[in-house]
Length: 212
Image 1 (cartoon, helix red, strand yellow):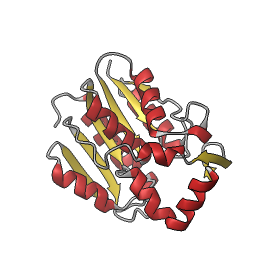
Image 2: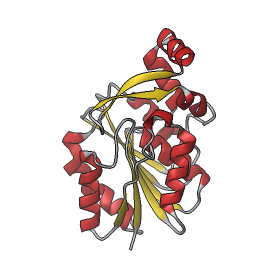
Image 3: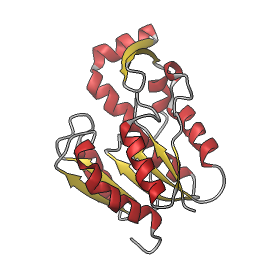
Image 4: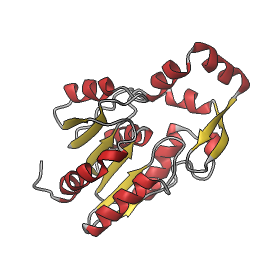
């Protein structure tokens, strides 16, 4: 049985509608799907390194494929670049260059305020309430490369109208990696209106070894 690790996005969780959708569709197709809480129950101290460690514990031994949404897509790319046992990846609006992207979105003044105070309040969609987030996330994220250089086959979907993660980041990555196939869709960041379009393509890509 094929094993797949689904990686939710920032301020989300294993109970997200997108995680549930793909888990159901892929399990119906015969896969085993794991959806860990990447914050490990401690969102305030969230870091890239901590999430990669949670991924490692859940991936276990042997071949595994990854699906990552937004920050989860960036984590999938980072993990695959460091773990050859990853077979294939599906990246949904991957947040390449996470630290740089966040700094640009917040702006210098807000970033400096966050750094000085050590914490910032953000809305957590999985918890449906504001939570504190440590600046350790940014310090840790700065250690990682913007575009992880993994060699495994990858399928990338990105919305042309994404106002959170610019599609140009996926285009830049795909332009440098012949192992990655990018499909730009008429959608926004969440890609919720194109789930039924993506699902059979993702299932075939992850479950059929002969499909390239």
